[in-house]
Amino acid sequence: MGDLVQALAAWRAQLGSARVLDSMATRQAYASSTAARATLPAAVLLPHNEDELRQVLQVALACATPLYPVSCGHNWGYGDACAPSAGQVVVDLSGMRRILEVNTELAYAVLEPGVTQGQLSRHLREQRLPLWMDCTGAGPDTSLVGNVLERGFGHTPYGNRVQTIAGMRVLLADGSLVETGFGHFRDACNARVFPYGPGPWLDGLFTQSNFGIVTRLGLWLMPQTQAINHLLCSVAGHAQIAAVVDALRPLRLDGTLRSILHLGNDLRVISGGRVFPRDLAGEAERLPEALRQRWRREAGIGAWTVSGALYGSPAQLAATRRAIRQALRGTGVRPRFLSERQLAAGEFAARLLGASAAGQRLRAQLALGRALFEMNRGIPNGRFLAGAYWRRRGGLPAGFPEGADPARDNCGMMWVSPVLPLRGADLLRVYGMAEAIFQRHRFDLFATFSMISERALGGVLTIAYDKEDGAESARAQACYDELFGRLMQAGYIPYRVGLQSMDALDNGNDSYWDLVRRLKAALDPAGILAPGRYQPRRRP
Image 1 (cartoon, one colour):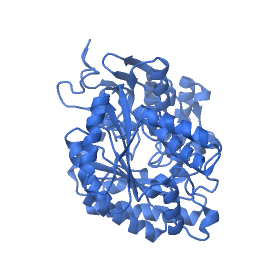
Image 2 (cartoon, one colour):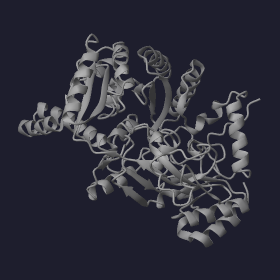
Image 3 (cartoon, one colour):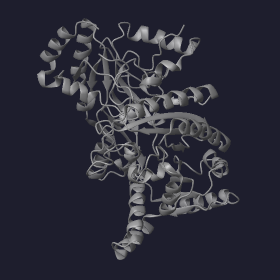
Image 4 (cartoon, one colour):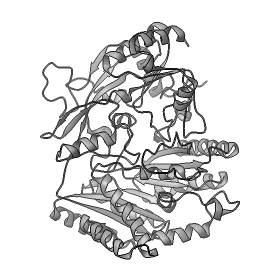
């Protein structure tokens, strides 16, 4: 740590006291985390533009004070707004929230890091633009740029988000500015329509790294289609999901299925509308099997649920439905396709049923269907964060999902996110490993596997725990550590990791991480940008 007192004084002269915060209350708020371990920042800075950010960097260099930039600080399940080590100064970029351009003809936007999913979605709808953005289930208050830089994924055909960017603007540690792709050529007209300019492609260097601060980014948007169907498949038996994966893989490979399909186990679906029933479970720390089966029946789901969207003209959707039905013949699974018209008819029926049990059940199912349709059209909804509250003592907060913030609400949640070949056998193998470890540590396993590409499944295995219980928090960390190590050993490497796992990425003899260290030394020799972020320490 350098001269923090001198740095704070210089930043206050630049930004004003209202945007240089070092009270314990503010520092503790930014240390809020769903993880079992959190770090306390030395202070928080709130720059509002690129020039202010450059001044912040100049002071940090002069005073040898490490900075930790966050877009909005909502990296839930992976570290939230916490730096890898205590004492770094958080640079909160949420005040840099301009939508700099939306090009309707070529379907792209140019965004600053503080632009949220909800903000861009509202802008497109308010301006009545014929475009949809891809969104994740993390809710309306999360940053688009931040998620892209973590290589997150969503739901639509543009769901593999890092593949839909064209051109970054990046501030390096010394305050110099870099435009990637074609952007550094004067008067380039192609910077947002093709990501690769001549020479090395640099954009990837600034994802999951600490080499620079991305201050704007070009993001492709999806033209609205004539029609949408939502695909739902209930898979009765656990092992049956393998045949479903193998049946759908050819449709993903040949482009029939263009959007990301999600395969969630029963607990993943159940946790979207309920919290752990302490009053019914007694001393049990996992959901009792009889209650699990009862809730599964009440929700009308099987061991697994397959969910995804179909886009195109009515004729294209009809052809895709036929292909899916044909592919699933012989698996014992019957696909269902939900249209906007069917959803509206269901909502009318629910009103007729009133407050009856059947009406309440139908309304719950339709609320989920409506939220899924909104997600498919780029309208984020925080209801899919409900699983983070599974073990929270107070359950879902009043007004949920409006303003949902699992870190602020003291939820315990950690995600382990392995990537595996798009094969049913691999899904069952990874699930089997995880279930055995979760049983040993006495946690319910929420599992989702998403077809993030034509050849890969991205897993999200959730450890939900009670943060108010010290012993349970320790068990959660032990469960995480064992699961992470087992998956790494088996070759199912995560696509992104939490702060607690970054050291474990280097086995001590890996030329890849040697190159990362050399790049860091060249671009940030003073080591002031996010030290420790995707920068494993050398092991002996």
